[in-house]
Image (tube, rainbow, N blue to C red; front, side):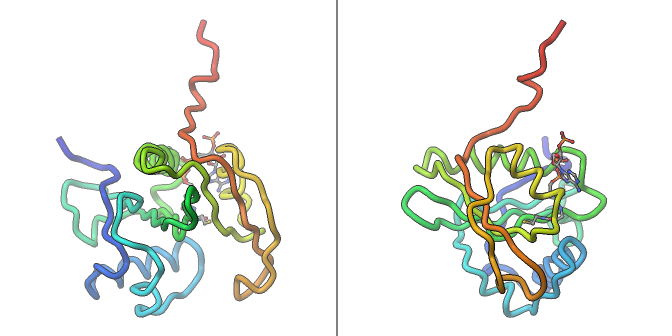
Amino acid sequence: MLSEGWRHGQSPSQLSVEWTNQVQKLFLDGTGEEYFIGSIQSLPVPDWNGNFMLFDSDDCNQDSMRGLLWTTPFKENTVRIVSFVLDAGARGKGWGSLAWNLMAEQLRPLGYDVVQLEVRASNEGAISFYRKRGLEIVQELHGYYRQGLGYMMRGQLRQYHPNNDTPKD
Ligand SMILES: CC(C)(COP(=O)(O)OP(=O)(O)OC[C@H]1O[C@@H](n2cnc3c(N)ncnc32)[C@H](O)[C@@H]1OP(=O)(O)O)[C@@H](O)C(=O)NCCC(=O)NCCS
């Protein structure tokens, strides 16, 4: 049975204009970054198991898309997160955590055990999300973002289940 949830996601080059417009809205809302249609479609993300889209219903159409996780094989054992964004209304409910675990579940069997990404230094929420999942800041990025400092973060690609650490009485 399908309902709200993450599904395999199209890659940027597969997106129709309608889909690309919706992704553009998600990026603008999620990151404040204005992407051009062409720059979305040419993001370096292949069509593979590391792409996910969140839908709020059984209809997997662009109007019910609420989130996106796009990754790319980067080095032999390293996967790079290219885009990870949820609609404002979908945040803070565990959907991001679920996507993270799906990514680890899909990509570890393919030999990827390291994950790396770029994040704005001002994005404390995302940095805390990644730290909890074992990533560390490995480099400062000057000039990567149009404005402000960026960080490169890297760590082991693993599922994270915080509730497993909680003692039950
Ligand atoms: C970052 C993001 C993908 C996380 O997904 P999410 O579904 O909101 O996260 P979850 O609900 O699974 O939260 C898990 C943890 O993330 C952390 N977190 C997420 N957003 C946070 C925020 N704004 N402030 C503080 N902590 C935050 C919390 O530590 C939370 O831990 P908890 O469960 O102990 O409270 C999502 O918030 C998002 O799309 N943000 C806007 C776009 C963005 O910043 N993308 C990352 C760019 S690199």
